[in-house]
Length: 484
Image (cartoon, rainbow, N blue to C red; front, side, top):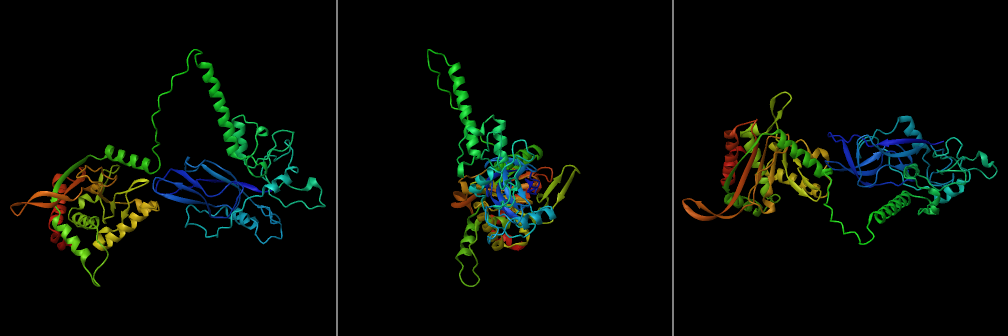
């Protein structure tokens, strides 16, 4: 007799309490191996594949794609412990494909793999996924226990009965639901049976769309929708006046759930505005010399020439030099202890707009990197952000954020601090403007710099000093040479 084990959504770390099902990687009836990924979920941090710590046959899935589940909620159930004489996919004992007996036995003896995310826990190789053959389900339906027999609704995986053995001694090879004494109903999923009971759906009146007439959840969902539509139509006819048709309903407002990345951003920004007494100062700077330096660096050839340098990489290096002079802005506030915590290293976050929304990848130990190293790391993290492959660790732990909103064609903004950091520098677009240069009016490349800071960690003098140093480095890049 197989043992049905329940696999719940594990703790995904980083304080995450829920996840949204993006894509199921297995179907009900498939055979899974220990640590095989079974579902892809999206958290507030990233998209990850969740492996199952049990090996056996998937008997039920909980939640459709797009459903948001809390940590600890059931994900699926797996039947483990099948005898070695029968492959769950219906293969004969002489088949070269191994059964799940050894996998299930190892799982039961160890209590599961303990795996949480792919890349952690046991390293058991993933077996080929196989589906239970519907023709075997049909052959064993007549051997299923009656509705009054113990375990009539349970899933049993056992060896096929031999030709000479009595029919009463042959255990069931698949799940068959018996709702009354009129014969078996081809249903393999406990979830389908429960869904039908909850909505008063008679499974005997349904025609299954699965192989060999197997009733699937889609069949039950369709019956539920049809019943609801029929009831709604009947109610509309009863309410509508006989002399005139009802007026068309006004279009309903669109409602977009705040969940996933968008929900996490909303929570963080709301918390920032609620907890941090922020202030903003800004200055226009002549970036002509900075753009000239960048052009010269990118035009260099020969063995000493490195990869192309971006404006964002130059500004990031300027920020790390400014934070070394004004460490008050590389800190956080411990509200419980009423202390300002000055952080020893700079982990520089930069805002990146992706199809999934705004994310802030973090360049670790930016204070130890030069312009070329920072630029390479920014390029690597940006590519991961665009493809949705950033891990939660790459999106957390920042101490200061740089936001280049100039790429959207805007001149200025008032950044909202990325809680629990103490400051954010915003950079507008660099564009030609009239500017007084060396006592004469000239057309120069001008940029607006905006600094939003936590007024609890410093006063305006410190914030102004930081911003002025950044502007001086933009206008005269040679100033930065003193700190290199």
